[in-house]
Image (cartoon, rainbow, N blue to C red; front, top):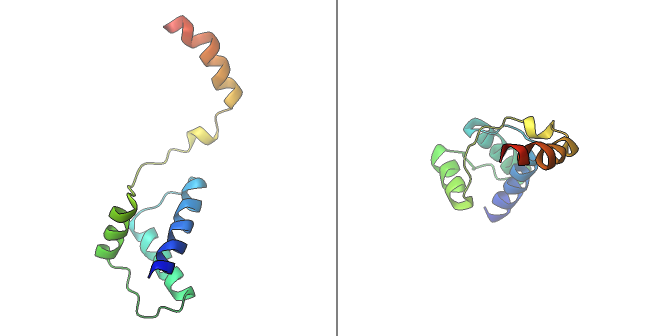
Length: 88
């Protein structure tokens, strides 16, 4: 099960890096896919198992807005250097 958890965590990090929205059903589905690829036929992605994984890895569901991926960093720096000081 350690290999399953390691591969699953790699998938989770990649999905979050891509700003993918992940919830319980997504976690279960991917855990089942990973287990199948590893040939673990007896694996069951129960709510309890998913909750245990989340607690153990300190994962929480958060809303992904995706707006930060659209913001131009130069615009932010310009605003911070020109507009923010005026407001302060």
